[in-house]
Length: 142
Length: 335
Image (cartoon, rainbow over all chains, first blue to last red; front, side):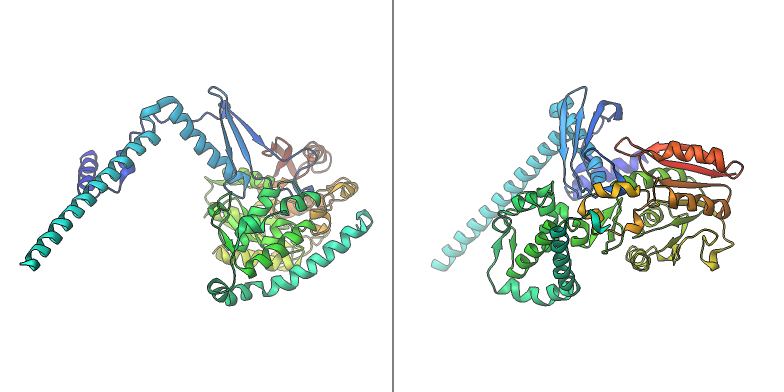
């Protein structure tokens, strides 16, 4: 199994540079303890449930040990934002604890490498085009 | 009910409903037929320009969360998913027809028509349900209730479930969506809701494991005749539990636009829940469970009622909190 995976890894890196997440080191990625989170769901006071029809969707999270706060209102539902907010908090926590080693930083390095590689190839292509054009022109002039 | 309403508000909502309904019926066909012409010709209006002033109008009408309301309506008018629309609406434009729709919808919202009715759909758990006027809009607390039920039956082999009063079908359909081993039957007193629940089941591809019957539960006539001898492993219900005296404090979105049959729980809020207890005595298999979503003060009351009146028939298993830390859910067991 391990062999297969390393083979697949070599193959994919040789054949294409798409499966970038496979090259990220997740070993330091933190996990989230629910007891470390202070969650604020706004539903106001008074009775809940059938008696009110509020559509508050915003969720605030505070990670107590580090003081990192997250606000999420991406989705219509608060329940979905609760999950989304935890994902964002995890990423922020990862960046806070691991800095250069965090997944986001690793991804950034990878993306930079990719774009510089793309630029290099583009430049090469441009150069080839130019030399071809100048050669063509030179031949035509003759 | 009418005596609780301020008269101007009522007339405003009436006219809003009329204008919206007349347009809603034709809106789906209208937008599809005219959108090609309006995108090629006609002036486009920046969304940021169109929303000018509406936040204040909404606020003046007593609506909080104005940004959220506007964004919901903008994404609905543009026929885009809510989470794909940027908060600042940059580069988004309305055609003149879309602008007219946008203004009409916001006018209706100012008349306190529920956002979920204007948009015609709302999310619940992982599914999106169609909404219809007069059919109760699922509340976010019910998601927590359904989550609890799902967690309790995740490992179960086969579950024959009954829902009493399914409304739009939110609870049954989200359980079916999450758990393939569940088969659900539902009864519902409102014809419109029965049709809507069946439509939602079909939209979600769950119609093979879902049945809904139009039936009004009454004393000694708990179930439709074809289900009179059926027994279930699990009964779930979110019966009307708002006390009649509380109606004077409710928002217009609820008291004007929603079906009071789905809300009014009588003087102590347990009038319908008591019928569900009796139904469960007859239609739960021994060891089967009844899960109920009720109001803030109800779980201790239910415990007392079980001990006093249902001994040897139903046992109180436990009560649970919703996500806002209110003790609102109960689990009962058939002896």
